[in-house]
Length: 133
Image 1 (cartoon, rainbow, N blue to C red):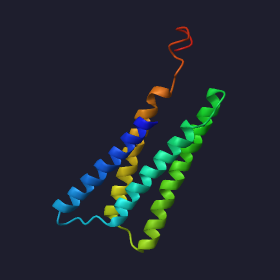
Image 2: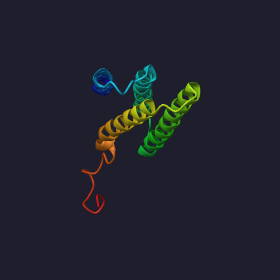
Image 3: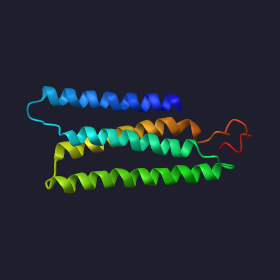
């Protein structure tokens, strides 16, 4: 879990720095503070849901799968809720914020999928060849 914490914070910092550099270099695009707040929110959501799944004391693999599926539904609900509340508070659609926030979400989702890829079939080496196909 410690390695995941370092990776997710590092990914968040890299995205914040790249967003700041894009805002600083470009004269046509102005990134609002909501984009940075959304990035921080995504780091907190992904970290807390990973903590929720990893700290579960499960007795069988099906409980872990249920917990992982619940966390993915909660993640999507939390991300969409933040996006909706931010857009409603602004009163007008901000294309820069929306596209940056959606890009952040997709990058964090790809990161999460790459982290969970190794846990999909943990017992695949133990069984026979017929069970693994």
